[in-house]
Image 1 (tube, rainbow, N blue to C red):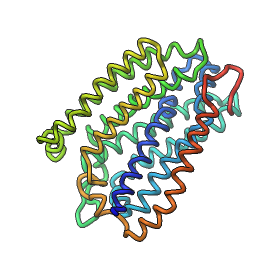
Image 2 (image 1 turned 90 degrees about the horizontal axis):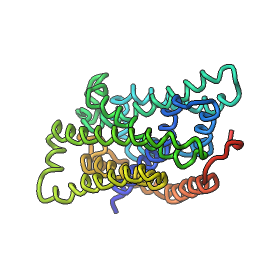
Image 3 (image 1 turned 60 degrees about the vertical axis):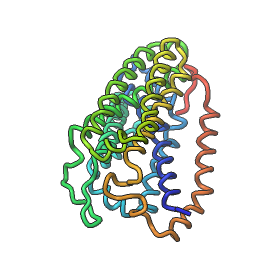
Image 4 (image 1 turned 90 degrees about the vertical axis):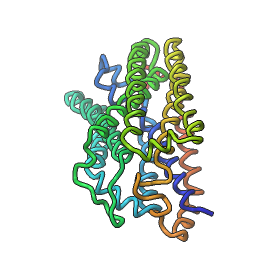
Length: 332
């Protein structure tokens, strides 16, 4: 049994779960500054108050799992990503503090509103830059990071940061369409449409930029016969884009949100196609970076119980707090 491959898949699942779950509440944080009144901003924050901290469980699982299961990948990637990772963590801290203190003060509420917005924007943009850095590749010599201090700061990684901001904001707008009470949610339809259009255009540019700048990825996508299979991903993405705009035009928020998640899944598949079997593209494969099999088996025995538990309480929390918000109710 290939335990390293099993853990490669589990880490990928944890990262994807974090992106789609914490993605929408980061997107709401980015939209927060656009709230037209204190009441509307209260509702926006209350729409994610019961679930936001649970969503970040997947980030802990992904990062902690990487450290335990692929220690060499962790040791190589961290020096390459220290700066964006620190900014991301500081952003998440600012968001968490804002959740706790915003409802405790009136005089200083504007400070916590700004903290919530800035923290969400910083965390989102940093995650995009981390993605861009990994996609463009990390220099490794003798199993150590050999790049410079600012290899993470390139036009490509900055562009990935903007793509991530647009994508998370789309998720956040679709979530607000589902959760906000009647009379508040309508104005988010045009916002969702604009975010969707920006995201589609930018992802299209990114999909061309990546293979043009990396021969390994270009060969992966455009060599036959596998190209026939891989090109199903952009084909299916085009169809989902059509459905997304159709659902937004017809005011079907739940369908629009689910289609947006489908687009995220296809983008994640595209990332996998571009990088497999590397866990540090394009320097270390998952097999080269994995811990000994004895460690992997021991950790897997714990994950067998832990993962279903996380999935269960996550699903339960969303079920308990399902439905639209009411103006006179809150979770703070």
